[in-house]
Image (cartoon, rainbow over all chains, first blue to last red):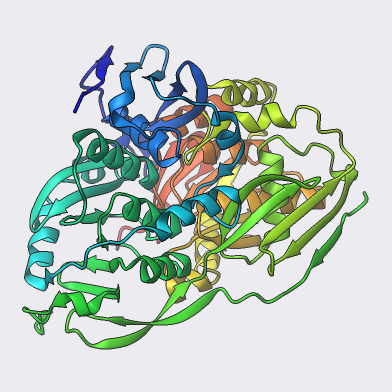
Length: 276
Length: 276
């Protein structure tokens, strides 16, 4: 599998900065806040969108974003990805034909994603053909994984205001990313898996963000059958999880969690902790 | 000031539904989750976007969204807003000319908003001309307001997974809205204020969501000089608050808060609570 040229004009971009704030006593103190950087994405030199990001993995973010927006299809046709923080731009060059780019671009999706519009129609049509494998998940594995995850969210611990996502296998965290928006974090992992040619069938997807329709759709598109979140779910996220056969575990904190779909795939080998 | 015809084919749309989940003991229980509905927005019969929303105030949401996307400018030119949940569509009809609609639509902004792209450039140019009044804010007023707000977030209390926003004056909550995304909630209040011809100079804007660049920009566009949040801030949100002269108070919970900008506009008449 060919890999594109990835060029970054800068590396080790800081994730947080220090600022002075005044507390409720009117006393000054130093706090860390998360960085937020504009990154304008160009596909074959055509301006597509401006993403606001922490900036940790911009190459994967832009690839994953374009893929999830149905603007990139062939990983082998990728030529290069150029990230230039000075001009705050990310250029993706591909040998793919892009004839319907205008049409795709004119159908916007916003924040919590797709819907009854034409873009949603297309997405759901493709998902109809998707068959996700049935996972076999142990409660003890879930607990081990949640414990591992607590060691990864550095920016959140320092500065808050970010969401984290991870692709996991059993109790191993294969990739963890934090970003300003949960959608950026998912897109970054999509880009990474796509470029590395990884399959999702034996993976678990973790997010600190809520399980809305768009989150469920993106994880299904990655081929991952288990979705785990610290937060809650929405009705459409729930309905889609049922429709797509995704095992959906939400409000996971410590030893507590709620299984919204796929409880039959979980071996409750630990049965919670009656002492908590 | 003329008001458009607002037609809704249904009212009292439920905000939550009950579902059965399994806890960490494998035991079933009933939980409430927030609804999430697709609403495809049409402007003069042209499909613009599909928004995912709780559905509480769809007319204000679509007006505010279109306004914040720079697609509506003249409130007196509005003809009607038709919300049809059966077809999940919201049609806005206006007498305004819409010649550059294609150009505006082709410049996308995503999740945490605008950036260095052409859309951001336009937004920042307009904001350059903005002069926000300097507020005089008492700490006791802030505490009274935060207390009032705890009585409003019904959907969040029942089901979580939503963000709330409010336009306030002193300790009064003039309007409170919850939605799946914090951007939808802000857009809804933008729509409301715009339609009612309200000015923002003497108001406070509250949100449960993070103060990112897009949040700060939208509140500035509403003419509101005080931004209050339960959550944190990002670097660009902070920089914009300084640039636009917005008094920015974050991580506000109980008697604790952090003033990121505009501390000189606050009278610390209560000086926190040393007992907490």
